[in-house]
Amino acid sequence: MPRRDEGAQLDAFIETNSYWLHDYALFRALKERFKWSSWEAWPAPIAQREPAALELARRELADPIEMYGYWQFVAHRQWAQMRAYASSHGALIGGDLAFSPCRDSAEVWANRNEFDLSRTVGAPPDGFNPRGQRWGLPLPNWTQMRAEGFKVLRARARHASSLYDLIRIDHVVGLYRTFNFGSDPNEAGTFTPANENDQRSQGEEVIRTIRQEVGATELIAEDLGTVPPWVRESLTRQGVPGYKVMQWERVNWGHPDEAFLKPAAYPELSLATTGTHDTEPLTVWWHAQPVAERGKFVRSLGLEGKVNPRRMLEESARYAILAVLYAAPSQLAIIPIQDLFGWSARINRPGTVGDSNWTYRLPLTLERMRRSRAIRSGVARLREIAVGSGRFT
Image (tube, rainbow, N blue to C red):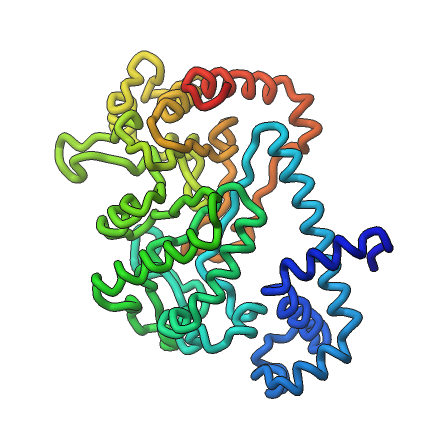
């Protein structure tokens, strides 16, 4: 429990975050009471949030509720200290506004009528999964969310803005049209809303709602995957930058003169990168490409003489590629750490379930990275590239 000198800070934290903290702390205390079972398996009066049952639970679980609130206070204070330290060194902290909470969450339990639990969210068929991806997340009940003034979405966006300097809107196309499945594993998925006009209207309304809550916090749209052109046009009109993944940006797709788009041609309203948490690192991608494809890449980016398509991706070649990307007019250039240092470990393989997904950790501690001559040399070279591109002073 907090010391006396923390009391005022704790009270202020609880008051500021009451819009989510009260339900969260009660939810966690109830999860503990019911041996971490799903809220749908709890006694009906609690699962259905009958006022008398909730009031009794708050009285009986006052101590664990206070404990879970205090833990959130401590975590938030530590995060704020880390963010202040980063800011003092000119670094920004970015984070996700995840597309939807999971079914067994405080948000869904506390706002049951804003989700359709008979449907689950996923992604339409694509190169990662020809049958579409089933994520198991509950389908937002967009009609009810709108009637509630997007209460849940506003709370999530507001909290994200208290944590991050940059907010990446995860799976932004799903805010326009949400691909979803029923309980039959053989059933094809469908889009909600069904027609383009309604999709466009909904997506733009949701983006406006998020903007109202985050204020000056920078928004970035994760607009990758199966995204119709009109969604990117809509984002551009609203001033929200989308992704430009160097390996995926091409001109004249499928034609004999197909080429990679030069980063110099990226729009200013964009984020330039070599990959995301869902893609293979640059060195792995390069290794998997035929020599002809590597040659096309080198010629398209004007790197003849600096990158040899017949050889593995050497350090100097990787730096040459990064220099071209950093020189793009894009507002932002964010590079996965694997591509900064030529590492090959992957974070996630979309459409698969495995022990390696989302388990990535840095191969060295920060202390060892500081002592490593190779890392220090790489950082110095990367700094030169950033300074030369005008992205760092």
